[in-house]
Image (cartoon, rainbow, N blue to C red; front, top):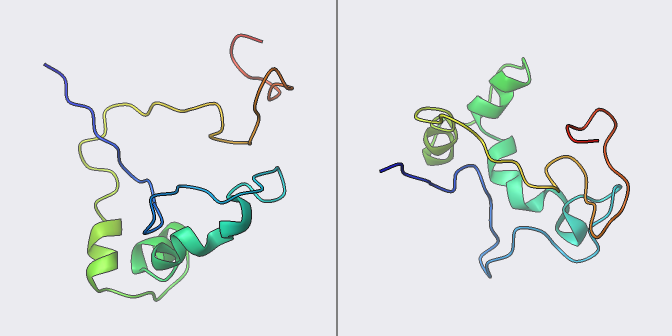
Length: 96
């Protein structure tokens, strides 16, 4: 039997993945980048950006394991832009 896991998803301590007011300009709503601040400081993130430095503690150990064992990624409608209802579609989107 296949296994499914939720991976690479940040939540606030009260269980939210975004804040209120999600839009194209603020894809995480009022939460902004605060949900991922822990990640931005890590060596893993710095390397992904082609920059030196970054922290090497527990957060980096967690961040560094983002890829092993991933066979496929299921992407939701809001992966690249917050669209709800029957709004516009992304250019080049499959099924257009």
